[in-house]
Image 1 (spheres, rainbow, N blue to C red):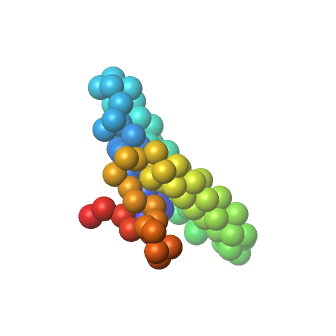
Image 2: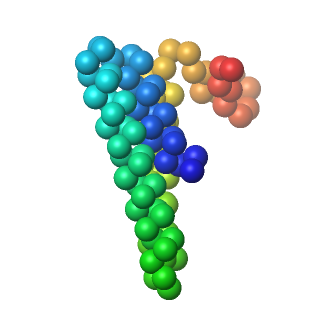
Length: 94
């Protein structure tokens, strides 16, 4: 559920920094995309003995797609400290 909600959350974040009309379209598209992939996930779960193969394909692809977009957004944000001088674990603002 977090993966599909993340798709919509990413769209919400992008919409916040877009003009009003484009932001509305982003929110609708993000919600529709999250719902569509969640429905596909549910369909794969109910598809009988072939569902593990579908999961092994769908979930990693969606994880990678979302992860790349979130990483790009973090790099573009002026509010993110990706590392400090000590080379320790990245810190993110709370």
